[in-house]
Image (tube, rainbow, N blue to C red; front, side, top):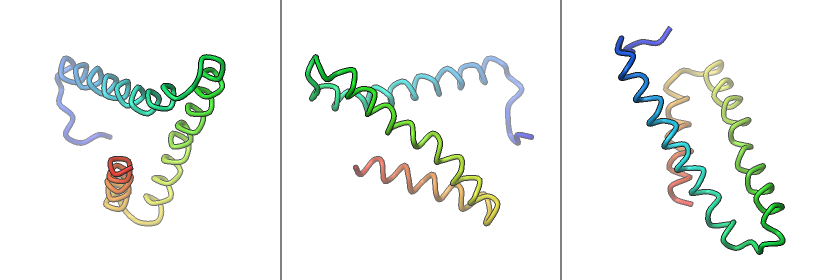
Length: 91
């Protein structure tokens, strides 16, 4: 059950589109720089490596969040998300 979700379908649809747009911008950001360093011959392999390593977070983050939620509370989950976001901004 989600708390505080508005009943407006248009608002939720716009939020979903904005989320997808931001995810697309993030994907371009983490793949653009390494792909600029790759040669034409090594581009497919380099893209595969960058994409594989980049997707590890998609598998590990839900496990970490589940562990934090089982062991602590939602506050620890949001602190984890804040910390990982700040780490990404700093690197």
